[in-house]
Image (tube, rainbow, N blue to C red):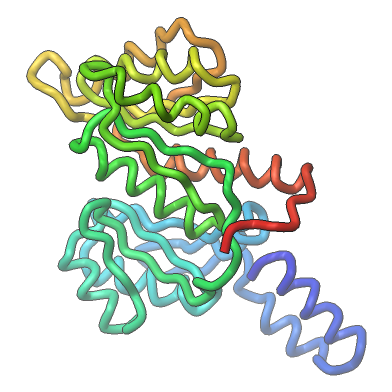
Length: 260
């Protein structure tokens, strides 16, 4: 239940179309719901504008299915990250309209897919191998109401590939860069745009990459200003942060013509 739905409920009570007892029943489980194996934060949509996201790794298929079905009863959108095909199939028994994004390993639901999406976010992947992380960010942004523009496979080994995209990055409200190996692309992008840059180190690389630690340290030590770094392979975190930044800017500008 989001702010708009709470307001509509209170307006129905004020008009006499909804009883006080009915409103209390609707709000009773708003803060949280105890499933025994999980305590669901139904209040998160009201606070953040987006429901609790399921981190599926480490959960059984039955647990994912139980959490997903309960969250889907409360809102039109659902996102589960690091999901296996087995977890998705278990959840789809209860949610036939659930989808699975193979590349990003995300399960998702959007019963309001025709809602407008706002432009302003640019996603940059250093290499094709970074796409699973980038697509996790892209799906997060889409479900949160934004239409990201993708720039793919423009790493520093062939930096000339990035040059045609400089105007796009300079016109963005926020840029997300996913890079593995040595993670140098982030500093390059950060030096070319005055938009905030969210860096996502990926675990792509050979031995001395240390599962993304090399890229993480390089990004943390970037000499470009305006760069913030999320955890290794955390496309969801980068996408969520980018959505919050872009939403603030869109709201401030009073954008009345979002992308459809």
